[in-house]
Length: 326
Image (spheres, rainbow, N blue to C red):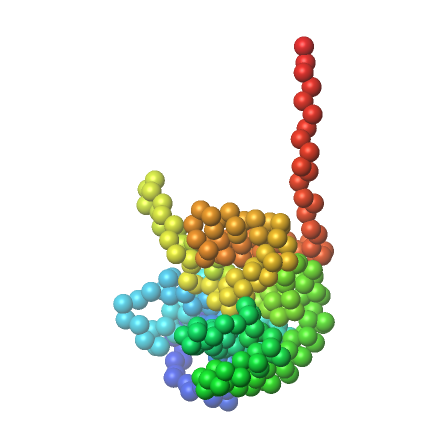
């Protein structure tokens, strides 16, 4: 489409990068390509940029809101994206650079296996409860102690222990990569000064939150992590619903898991205090979300200031002396 809105050329291409670059190289003049963010955006983005064309990655949800049409096909979508590009009205999504992409790949893979490990542990605990086996809290997280469970000669438990041992072998090189990334990242080391924030959590937050300047406000970071409720308002009536769904689910999971560690390491800190207070008013899950939201605010403050976390001094228990005045 030219700057007047006339369609110059329209073709259907396969997923081949060579076909895409050939299509773009066959067009004269300056080119601007709009690509909707998806799970395969990286190789398409790089192939397009290699031709010298300008590349803009569009936010798929915001683009759908702006150019919603009754008839929705790939042909119609391409025309809508071209029209938005012509009007400079494309809602852009952040495209990380190569170093950030590599860091995100490591984090995604490690957290994938971390979730699998947690599922296996929960399943094993359920089996032991069904069989009436008494066990120490957190025993499956201790490699030496959990092997003692084999003496019960329960096939289901033995299979789960084998699966956990296999997971340990798979994740060992990944943990090494996470440690190397942690040592290279200044932002991750800053985040690790927060009580309860380990290397994996720090690297995950640094990979997906940085550069922190891309968030214009703190609330934008909170919404990006999915830790704020949805709001429905009509006139003077407003209703808060479930947590927003258009978020980064990985960061949401990381922060909710990390707040438990922070509450254990700093039992009188702000994260623990807010989590307990909200849990008393609502339930345990509400308290966990509130504590994760507070932890995220602390992380954003640390990244923006560029200084390590400083523990707040506890309030003084001494009461002020009151002087009678006459």
